[in-house]
Amino acid sequence: MLCLASAPNDTTYTGTLNGDVYMWGGNNLQKVIQSAHGAGIYTIDGCDEGFATGSRDGCIKLWDTDFKPRMKVNLAESSHGYQGLTVRSVHWRGDRVLVGTQDSEIMEVFLREPDKPRILVQGHAEGELWALAVHPKRPFIATGSDDCSIRIWNTEDKKLIVQATMDHNVRSVAFNSDGSALAGGMSDGSFTVLKTKDLSEVIHIKDRKEVIHEMKYSPDGNYLAVGSNDNYVDIYAVTQRYKKVGQCSGSSSFITHLDWSEDSKYLQTNSGAAERLFFRMPAGKQATQRDEVRAIRWATWTGVLGPEVSGIWPKYSDTNDVNGVDAFFGGEVMVTGDDFGLVKMFRFPSLKKGTLIVSYI
Image (tube, rainbow, N blue to C red; front, top):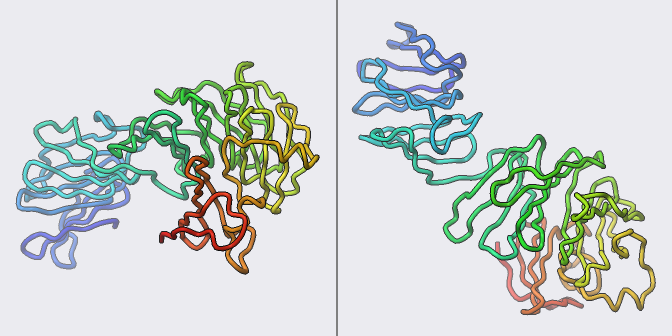
């Protein structure tokens, strides 16, 4: 029994795992409405007009006060539907039904146009959300999570633009320099390149066995750097249909952060062993000369290691306590996210303690 609703005269209706509805009088089973849904019934809502039910089959059904069928709406086949849509909650009042789905959506169904539900809320469905990237030119962000989906959102109206389902958990995403392509790193060591406009696949490559936690396109758009938990960063030539042209080795732990130089000739990495290494692009040969490294001008700064970010570390903190950094060079500020649930803003560079500007909980 997955759900229940009360009715007058000590009557109770319950939804079952196999899609039946049981009618109870007190403690006694009085009737079974078989195959009310084609799968488990997760929710029943009672109102003056009757009852509404929702199921794993993607449908909502409306019943009269005697639990006789009145209307069926297949949300999975509606204008905002998709394969695998599961209804987890319903609320029927008048000519409208509110529907909550397993994928964190809230829809409003109008009974006069049941095939055109209105989306009120959307979000990722399960697990953790690791992947986030900002479009370089438009007010869009891309996200990916353990629900195996990649989604692009409009940040101005806070609505989902397009989504696609992957074969594995998504742990990283990256836009190219003009925003026309989006790369997604997967938990199985593969990555996929998609067209931003409709998230159709361009290419899928698997050169590693462990999760891809970090990836970035070069500023000139010619290369994609892919960092894995195999301790390597692989370099792919975009114009050669993502042919692998280099490999950065030397890290003794998994890759956590990547940054390209302004001229796309260097890459810096952070690893789980608190290593900061530098590599010449695209071959991936390590750069160790101090003067050479000091002359590099970075296009972005997202790493947590180096004298430029020494001030972000609280006293007695561990090297894994600060998880993310993003610097805004023009404003000479940077923002960090840490294990304590805090978002902090610092001056950049932050060479020593005392550069904290503000902290957000």
